[in-house]
Image (cartoon, rainbow, N blue to C red; front, top):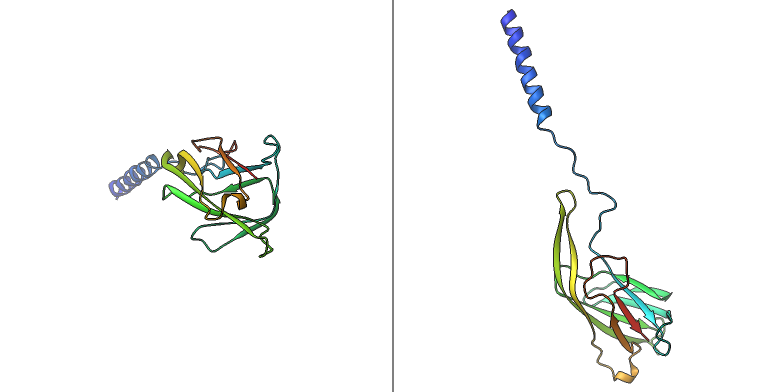
Length: 168
């Protein structure tokens, strides 16, 4: 009986050591993890290109989506780009609450998506390379409220800086 007790003790010791030696630390993604960045847009005055100019009664919606987002006034916008495709289009509207003066311009954003591996816990994050912005509006050019576009960052890797200026 003494041999059985010794055997059981030895067996439990081996099993316990095996279990504790095979444990790994938990994989948790830090809150400081850089996620796939949003596109940052600033609105400027076409007549004074150095001056921010808020858009009033503004609304936007991604082409193909149904949820329109309305903003009373803003001079900066953060919007997502599709990371499963190489293009995203948005409709940007001013005078959004008044059907008689509503003015809508469509912008198409073209880019190349690059998935960057961060680590096992966080997985991948997207980056948008070779970013381009194109106005795709069917109206006569003189009626467009967006007058000019200026890409500030052709590679969108973070949200620390503005990527696109829109002049109106």
